[in-house]
Image 1: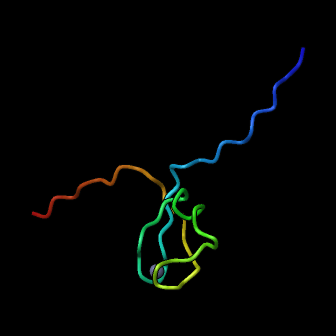
Image 2: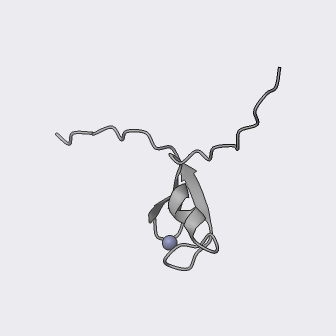
Image 3: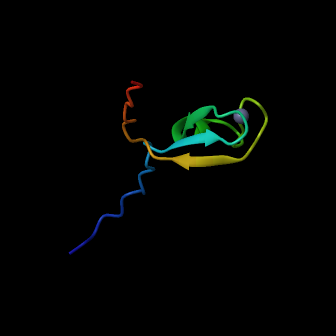
Length: 59
Ligand SMILES: [Zn+2]
């Protein structure tokens, strides 16, 4: 039984948010850049889940 080794597929659904300016970037966009860097120049991102944001109605 030969087991094919498939390349690990990068989870492209991950979204990162710059902790400085709050710009959201996808992992796919970041991987295209030569270095992980925000448009504002900051390099610290926090990973946020690509979940559907719940809409909160302001009464
Ligand atoms: Zn930024």
